[in-house]
Image (cartoon, rainbow, N blue to C red):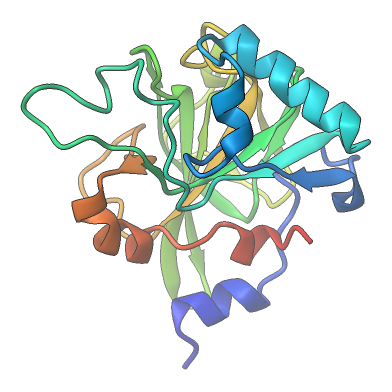
Length: 225
């Protein structure tokens, strides 16, 4: 029997954002603490990131920037969601980000049903979020779509059936999307635990072993070149 990672690598998925944009027009983006270019510019607000990412896209003649799985990032330091005096800092990203400076359509990666949805309103959080549940080839798992528009949560019900490639949302803009430059946070989750409409998308170093296993690389499914 296939293990889950092998299953992900062999399954065919739909694009999850702007389906008409070919993967050839994607470019990898590094927002990690090891990217020295980020230390040379002021990136304090959503607008700063929008300008940086648009300049990056223009320079690479690309339409969507992608990356971030298991990146250690500084961009969460502005938010108490990721660090307070009683908790270890969470700064390791465990999803895949797809950056595009517009309100793009968002699609279901696979057949499934709506597990849960909610607006996670704290600064730096997901904003509007949808989680889908999938039962495929004997595996039960989940995909999370974060930083959506508020309208994406209307006319939704838990248990609604969705089909692969079906539009399920629109990308959100700041500040409703957690106050980030526009991007989709896409994440695979094996065990959703007791979460509803939310699941950690950033973890601490001490929890990385668990989360890297429970949330495998989304690009195994998306297969962006």
